[in-house]
Length: 185
Length: 428
Image (cartoon, rainbow over all chains, first blue to last red; front, side, top):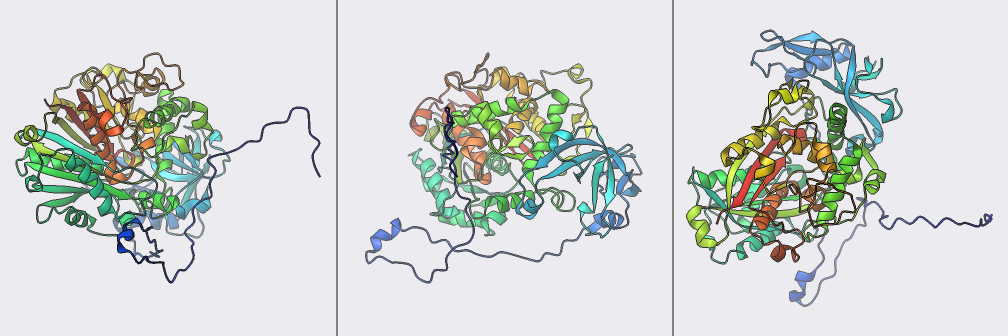
């Protein structure tokens, strides 16, 4: 049903930059036109073909593997340098300050938001997750931070630097760093 | 080390997609432009080349460097590829400088390119995100705009930087680009336009972030004798610096500020540095280059800067790293108008414009960011600026600065992992 026109009509909102998103689908073509005169070939439009490109890659976590084994067993592990006592919340087996080998330690399951963002877009692999919140967590007793996801908060305006957060673990481990995530503390 | 000069440069028009050309053809366009601009240069005089491109994923062609080299007809002379993420162009420029400074070559061609249009934007972001730790960072976030958004949220927390100040960078760079025919995005914007654009990673909107491009750029570097044989306006590379930092920004230390010559420890009593709010690699690169070029007070002794503004936020952070202002004052620096060009109308009220024009070309935000070409593009634009030849190459002189004897170019990779700074100055 047509709406009644009011005395003051709002001008229509036009977006002159609107455009359809390009997609990777197309039509299968088995032939292309070809000119008799070869000198006109330099003006030819480019031929673009679709080339699928996928691989199964055996990604080894190498010396970082205990971190992932820890997550699967509901433990959050960092490393600490026996020499200079520098503690890494994102583990590394060798200390970047003094070069010594570090030891695995359990991190507290509570920390604070050091910084944050909310991703409304992302890499193709994570587009399905958007919007999602990323935070860097600072822990008492650790010198470096941990990148992780925050759930249980709706909008970025509701996340505060310094707010307490606590770790939770997936019951069924995926052996990914997202096996641990944080919620407001 | 011998003095090194830039004698010519060329850039292909940066666009969203160049399906009409492979990377070799794009490089050839930039090379021919540079080669033709110094008529006395012969192919025999070229001793070798450096290939600058970032991603084998985007290219889907390994050893693309040699394919561009053979297309240019530069075999069997030396060539190597240099790669370091977003700083690939700056690192390659300095590799060319090293080849000439060491005496290995008298004339070195540095060429760079990237073909980013071959995948969709979000797949492209996935490729780029593989330049973050694939054990700990990529699987959690996997998105560079998200990383930089986190860094600037901390910058805002530490220093009170505002999203409006960031938007002013976008207004400035898009407006400058209106006078640069090589730029991909040439738009007159307002602060509101930037804030109203789609949110990508809070607080960065679509207009706070550079775009992906197809493009190529070429620099020709020579020793002093060759330079003055080829041109009466050679530009000397008087300082180079390269800094690095931890790939995982969560690993960055919280220590003391690395002080610039014009700063003192008492300026930063309570600041933990670099944390995730500042780029230590940028500070380190800048100070090395300043030392080599004999610069003590950069804002007074440098006439203009072309810096790596992949994000409006990183432009503000970089003002501070380069000691153009103190740490924490980057937001105020742009708000007061210092990095705006004196003669261009931005539709903004600016109190102190033109102190040190920054990204007169439009920067990455407006020119586009075909990664391997970007750092070289900056060198070419800076070179033309110092030669007083903007009118000739851009077709209009709006962006030609009155004082342009010494410029700084700055190239930056993944959350500040590699940063290069090179100083270019009038050599005649």
